Amino acid sequence: MNSRRGFKKSKKAFLLGFFSLVLLHFSLAGAGTKTASPKLKFSPGLSSIQQENQNFSVDTLHEEIAKVISGLPSEHPDLLPLQQNPAWENFARLFKASWEKANTRRLEPMQTWAASELAEVRAKTKTVFYPFGGPDLLTAYLLFPEAETYLLVGLEPPGNLPEPATFQHKSIEAYLADLQEIMSDYFQKSYFITRKMNEELDERKINGVLPLVCIFLKRTDNIISEIKRVEFDDSGNPVESDYKLSRVRIKRPVGFKITFFKKDSNRLQTVYYISCDLSDERFTPSAKFYLYLNRYDHWTCFIKSASYLLHFKNFVNIRQLLLLKSDFILQDDTGIPYRHFKSEDWEIQLYGRYAKPVKDFSGVEQPDLKAAYEDKTRVKPLPFHLGYHWGTNLDCLILFKRKAKAVEVPN
Image 1 (cartoon, one colour):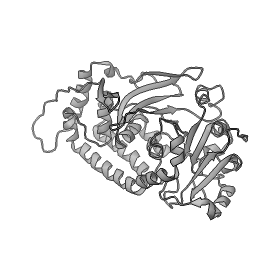
Image 2 (cartoon, helix red, strand yellow):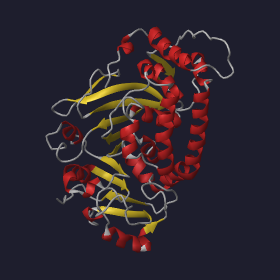
Image 3 (cartoon, one colour):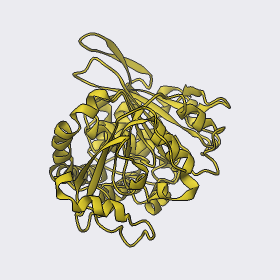
Image 4 (cartoon, helix red, strand yellow):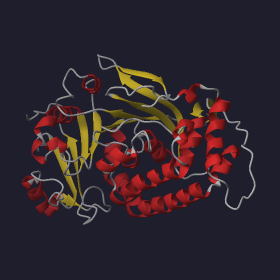
């Protein structure tokens, strides 16, 4: 990651540079005279919001920045000039339309379905583990909105929220266009395309996963309480530090932790994103992140659009760990192969329709899963679309509920 000395300056110089630069790049629509830079007054530190039973601190700086990149109005008057910029207005309009369309077609039906079909799972779920989920907090959150902790894992860098140095090398239009590009794919397909993430999440563009996770938090009416950097020591203990721009790229596993809350709630929730290679070459029983995960007694696992990685011989360690630690597994056909779930160990409920994997993936068709879906007495409808079959809407989800703790894990 690039060095960002500006982050260490005083809050006034920090924020003044950000918005002065935005005003330097863009004039307000119809303005024919120069406009003086506003005097920024809000604190980059923590404020407090009084809840019914508890005080929660708020990271006011990053909370306000998260609103702006989410296409939502900031409540602070000093951000009004930015929101009057035609580029931001157009971004906000397009983002709102895309969100509303996705909400009607996928998000609302998914929430209604989950409230009924996942009621027992929700009641027993404290931690949602989403391997290969990347930035996709939204799906996990809407399926399990009451979980205490969400643990997302991907290869993409954790990244940073926009800071003044970010805009010294590109315009606000370019940053917002990059956001619009990557989010449009997600809204249409329900997953992020790996190739585009490699391009758009580069530090010279969107700069990692953090902006996308913050967007999902703001668009689900959550408030950011705190952001921390997360690394791991050799024993697998998480080591937290204050969020700041990193001078060097830290080796995996590395990520961030965000604590957040809803305005009408009296409890905090947490989302972790960890950048980590889960292949057997890196994810060994002595690896830092393996040791960390192995401390969990149980979790609810969610897997979708996972490139069928758990079907291959070089992802045995993470597959075994998921089978040992999961009380519930909700996945599509890209998750753990169906043959690894024995009826004496798991209750199995099928949803939707099974279809042959899309042409991007070969050698991962599952005849046993296809046969299971042919027994219509075992299958319930899936009233929304999720995953790789977005073009044909032949979607499937499978819910596995553990019957007993001891499970014989196949190699």
